Amino acid sequence: MAKHLYALLLAGLATLGLATEGTPIRSHPKKVIIRFQSGLQEQDIRALLSPQEVEHVEVLVPSMNLYSVTFKRPNTRTAFLKTFSRPAGLVQYAQPDHVVKLRQNPNDPELSDQWSLNGKTERGNIGALRAWELGTGGKDAAGNDVVVAVVDGGVDTVHKDLKANIWINRDEIADNGVDDDKNGYVDDIHGWNAIENSSKVKGELHDQGYMHGTHVAGIIGAQGNNKLQVAGLNWNTKIMALVGSSGETSVVAKAYGYVIEQKKLWLKSRGKKGANVVVTNSSFGVDEGDCSGAEYSVWNDLYNEMGKLGILSVVATSNADVNVDEVGDVPSACSSAYIIAVTNTDSEDKKYSDGCGYGKKHVDLGAPGTDILSTVPGDKTKKLTGTSMATPHVTGSIALLFSVASKKFLDLYSDNPAEAAKELKSILLESVDKVDSLKGITVSEGRLNVFKAADTISKY
Image (cartoon, rainbow, N blue to C red; front, top):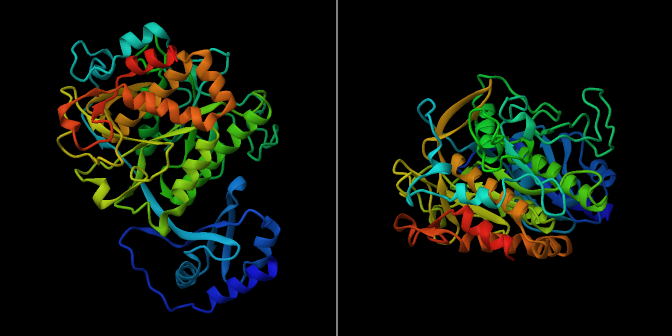
């Protein structure tokens, strides 16, 4: 195998300087994401990548044999992509390391209420008040913590309205510089920072990404019924913080890789280690990226890998008024069966007028994302607008559904997590309220109704 790969690498390096960048979508000039065939070992890969041409090699997701390779020169990266973009030998594919960006439209300062959760009229009302009569989140019927992975710009883990609901890796000792639980990550108490390769998931108060992630976390799981500030869709839950939304695709892959490893560990140990992650929230993407093209192969692979473990991935579509079926979008126009793509609706059940993506084939449903009040760093709250705010309404709803799900559904999830995840997705989409503004431009043609979905899964 090693000799065969060596021959392939030589063929790739022989084309140096013959190709030029042809895509208008930004990507790292020297990085390539490579998925090798499963039989190839890490030591073979590292030995074969020439130190004269390669600056850095990093494992992104071990179970997928997914690597990031940083070349010393941009033209080396270009030549490698030209040779290995299609499956060949021991390389499944190689793709650019695209730049991803947050999907947020900053808005005015905080309001005095949360219209998306306590709406008094049928318009815009996702049924949270009625859903809370069935349950308020936290654990499933088997007593397992329901964990939500927020892949974003960080989370204020000591925010007074969030800290009780932050996931804690109880097999790790904080700040001792040791991988106590031997999961491959040092001091990962609340999650992982895939940008810095560290356990630091808190950011600086002025950092927009940190504010964004904290706001998203609050929509999902600000503690409820505690006489403080706001309530999340889950009054109680466990929020795992992943810093991974700013930078390149490889950073996102590392963040997802952490989720994959934690869920695998949880399944292997039968709940004694790792985390019972049931859903990820991703409010970022690559505008007009072609997820069906070879340059974006890794995205569906990542979502499918999580899906096999029973993890649904809720993603924000573009904040531009575009049909993503036509122009493309990553990840909301990706084809994985485990993705739920969300667009932004307002309190009148209108698609947000200043711009948000749509698509009859790829955008699954709408959810409140306009003038949404939630937590921000420094024990504060703030109102923000964007598909980034719509997405965690759906993510939080999925976590709530797990907490009220019947024993029959949980048995299915235990026996066949991938099938159960797809079943939950179907329940969610079939429970929407049909609204005119989404007719013909989304899969479900409706806006999230968490009560209807919770009622259905509780009787499953």
